[in-house]
Image (cartoon, rainbow, N blue to C red; front, side):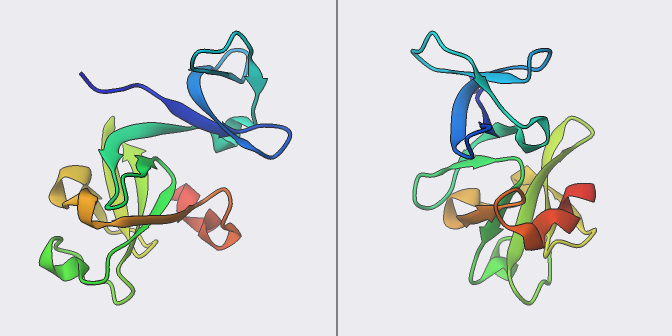
Length: 129
């Protein structure tokens, strides 16, 4: 069974992880009896996948692979991808452009999560993809 987990940036600026209550715009960390208010636009869901370092991959993460063409049909020179959800499926966009591939098209445990669209302002244009 897939683990359901969300992350969001708290009003303090720190990331929190756990269950998300959208109507209250809070995340409830695991094994805690508190609710942490988060910025709604920063809330992303865990994909159920981990990168090559064992780091959980969330929607909005920027991924890097030095030789992506071995595993994916994309031809991006920089070998970057941004994880997004579209039509109820986890997908990624190659090189922050409009090329869309389903998340199963790659071996994500050979990618590395190197940032996200919330902490890396240069990725904000990917949010509209």
